[in-house]
Image 1 (spheres, helix red, strand yellow):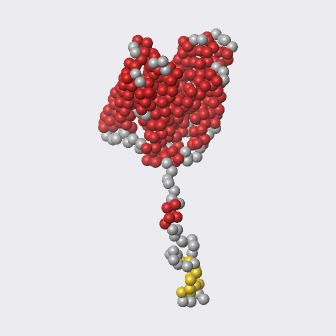
Image 2: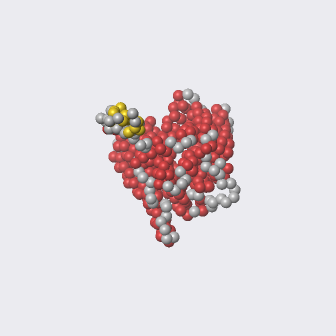
Length: 454
């Protein structure tokens, strides 16, 4: 009997049949599954964050970075509680932490420059060891009653703490360095995630520090922060496959501060930092004046929570901007508009309304920061990326310090509810600076005869 090769069959074709003198075998491999089986087995495509962390090595360096970043929100609160509890002086505690902030603003760009020149692992680990040693020295000086000047010297040593958030953003930029739409979308998602991580760490850090210092012993917050920082940086630095290459001493690009566009953007960060600093001080003064001082931290945490949620949603729902300058102007406009809500709520005298107002105002913070960091990445040469992003953080810290000082002076000379005019004015200044930068970038693109990528 002749043999015929297997043939595709329909749902009603038997496995074996005879046609005349020919035996026909139907192949199972070509069977078409029923429709309901196809629908049941349909796989939903992965979301933007799933695709982002599918990159080899991304989860490992992100884990180390999050461990190292949490203490950033712990050190200041831990130092204040530890020094004030031991020496009985909030003025001394505030002066020590202010000195550390000033030292960080001066040292951070130099540390970032070393990271760009010699690599993240070779620079970040020894810099972190020095910073952790400074924290432990502060702990010992407080514990054993050393002179007050030793507290300033010890806390100033923590200024070598590397900008772990900037190094993480630099890794994302390196992994998605090719100018393709897919990489642009991935980098947009990565920047949104990093901003949400910043907000989460600065929201949880003070809470963890206050709990450790009050539940265990006054030095527990500083000790835990130093251990977490060193452990996280060691884990982060061990992930060498995702570390950006170094450029060395030769063929270096000009410093970011020499670029007028970068300088204009740093002014926007400075004004945005003033929003953060003034809001924090005014909120604490307002809740204390209303007899709800214990709720001040919780109210501020709501603002950070709103920013964290907005950052995650921004990365998954909003597409990358074609004109990043223009989007920055729109984001600062939204931030200015939303900051009218805390002012109106404070004037009404309602603490729940103020909490809701700050929560909503926080949703405008993350898009502004994500867009600003994206623009920094566009403007800064690859071999200066850590330096450029650290300069933006330094501008934020400087603005935060100025906003805190202005907020403190205002609430001492006017009702605390009126203090919410300060963050509104700072946001309006950021809007003006961002709009000016957008106009300048558009004019530059027109004179060069092409469209700017920013």
